Image 1 (cartoon, rainbow, N blue to C red):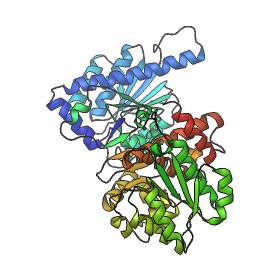
Image 2 (cartoon, rainbow, N blue to C red):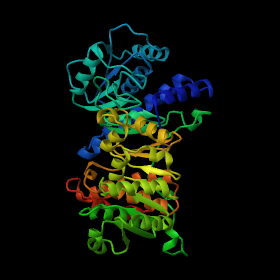
Image 3 (cartoon, rainbow, N blue to C red):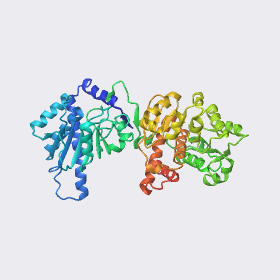
Image 4 (spheres, rainbow, N blue to C red):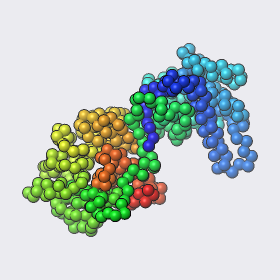
Length: 509
């Protein structure tokens, strides 16, 4: 599991490392500069290897442009310029002619560069460079870039050569990923200690390129008493999925109740039910429209089938809820009165965790008080449109504050909120969050969300805590899509493909 942090937390960790542990600021700066230099060198060596060049002279003879600011990010840049120069690179360093308050460490690094007689200029030269390094602004930037800094970035973006950002591309908000006027567009971002939120959240993620995290001497100890609250799952976390017991039966792996699929929407019920089975659930019961019975018996013969039509709905639901270990409700049920009664009854009467998706959320938008009345953990899985209906916010506003929107909703209604987007956010009521980086744009296809609902329910059925199952389910769902995209490409990827990817991922555990 990776720790993700915002600018305030990173500044505090930096301060704690310097003041509490006594690591000099210049030492951290030197280590940061060395990390960036090494990553640039790795990139060039990889290019040389790919081209099959015989005479590998490393960095010697390359040309580098380093554009620096007045803060410590600029100090990193000056140090990178010196280290590249010492490796035989022709270095030009640019710093604004504007009078700015230069940090003490950056002034020291500039003085060192001047003693080495490395060229420092105020305008970007009209020539080509092999590498362009952005060291203008770090994680502290909170205003739109204008004037000469905007000119610098636009010119840098138009240049050829490898583009490298130091810690974060200048112009990307470190906390939200919002672009502040304009931003450096990096091929590679070398960030330090922990991943900053703005490097993962869109649109910042599109400007960061490939993100590499390097250790410079700041680690989890630097949090001291205030612990991190945002994370990203990795492949190593798959080991937390409940293991299969040698001596077990179908009852050992839980019972999933799926309430999904009005007439002509059998696919929604199928995808959720099948995903629960593929994730490892022992038994799945599907309550659906009577018209879907025949097709579901063919598509999912393993499932127990029932209907949720009136007048026997309440009786069947009561019996089914007593049977279930977890309930997944909403996909394809419509928003008519019968579906509304279904959702209300489940939230009121369920004594096991509930995963609510799709039409269930559209119904809920008019009855948010039902969430506060629920007596069990509830997981809501809205996409941006559904979240807009739930919060009465515009989609663009939600996009700009994806993390905060999920956190606020989870806290207000005491639910686990899975806000689906290119970077899906899972928020717990206590403020902890997960940002998911698995998955691809081929998964933007009908039925994909139904599969996710089934995966989360399947994990809960096997004993995972609801919050953990939500974050893991999102990650597993994305990995399944990635496995299939690697084989088939992203065009034409279907929900069925994602189902096929589930067992491929779980097979690796």
